[in-house]
Image (cartoon, rainbow, N blue to C red; front, side):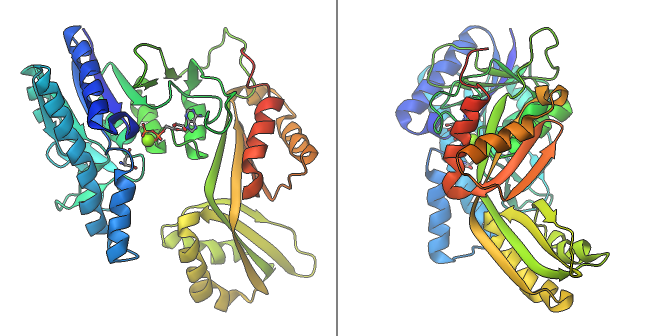
Length: 409
Ligand code: ADP
Ligand code: ASP
Ligand code: MG
C-alpha cells in the first residue's frame, strides 16, 4: 500500500466523460489499497475563458479580483470529480486551496506557496476518504484568494506531496511522459524514461510547459519523487524525474530541446559606456518585479555601447514604459528598438558538461538553415539562442535531428 498525490490537468478533466475516467482510475488505486490525494486543474479552456471574461470588463483587470474569478475554474472540477467518485461508491471530499490552508504570499496571479496545514487532509485520509484539492490556488495571510500562475496545479500537487510525505507525485496529462521536445512540434520526439532534476528544471525554465517550473523547484527542494504520465493510457511508466545522473548508462549528450515564444527583446542603442550603466538600466526594471532573461552588452568604440535584454512578452509594454519614463531621460541613449517577434531555442543535457563543441555544432546547424542568431546564453548544461520567431519550429526540428534525439539510445 502506498500514498500517491495525483494531478490531472485540464485536458484530462476536459469533459464529464473524462472526469468519470479519472474517477475510474482513482477507484483502481483505491481498490489496490492506496491512499490518494488528487489535485485537479480547471476543465480545458476554462482558465482562458475566465481571463477573457475579465478582460471584457476591464482590459487590465485588478489582480485581486482576477484571482477571485480564476480560482473558480478549479472549484468546478473538484466537485465534479468528487461526485464521480461517489457514483462509484468511493468516499471522497473536495476542498478549495483556501479550505486546506494553502497559504501563499500576496503576489496575485503569480503567488508562491509558503505553507500548507496538512492536518485536515491527514484526518480525512485516515477516515478513508480520497481527498480532492483544487489546483493553482491558495490564500494569502490576510485571507485573499490567490493563484499560482499558469500551470500552477502542478505546483499544488508537488507541494502537497512534499507536505504530506507522499510516496510519489504523479502528474497525469495528455502526453505519456517527458519527450525529447514537444511532440506536437516534432512528431519524431521520443519519450524519456528518466530525466534528471537539473535537466527538467532547465526544460521547464526554458519554455517546456509540461511542468510548471515551480513544481520542479519544489520537487528538488523536498526531494519529491515526481513522475509524468498519460491520463489516457491504461498503463505506462511515464517519465521519472531522477536526482542522480545515471553513471552506468552511457549518458546522451543532449537530452532535450526547449523553446519559448513568450519572449521579447529590447535594445538600447548608443548608450554612453561608463561604469554603472547596466545597473542604471536594469535597476528600475528589477524594482518593478520584471524578470530579465538574457542580457548582451557589447564593447563600445566611440564611447557608446548597445545594450540588449529580453523580458517575457507580457511584460514588454510595461518594460518599455519604465524605460521611457524612468531610464531614458537620464542616460542619453540614441534610440530604443523593441521586438516582440523573437523566440528562444535551447538544447539541454547534463552530458554536455563533459563534451566540448555543443554550442558550435548548434550554431553550424542553424547557419546551414540560414537562421540568424540574435543572442546566445550558455550554462554548464544548456545552450540557448534567440532567433526570429518565424524560424523557431524549423530550428527545433533541425537541431532535434542533428543531435540524433529521434534515434533510440
Ligand atoms: P496539463 O493541462 O495536463 O497541465 P499541459 O498542456 O500543461 O497539460 O502540458 C502538457 C503539454 O506539454 C503537452 O501536450 C505537450 O504539448 C507540451 N510539452 C512541451 N514540451 C514537452 C516535452 N518536452 N515533453 C512532453 N510534453 C511537452
Ligand atoms: N488552470 C490553470 C491554468 O490553466 C492551472 C493549471 O492548469 O495548472 O493555467
Ligand atoms: Mg499544465
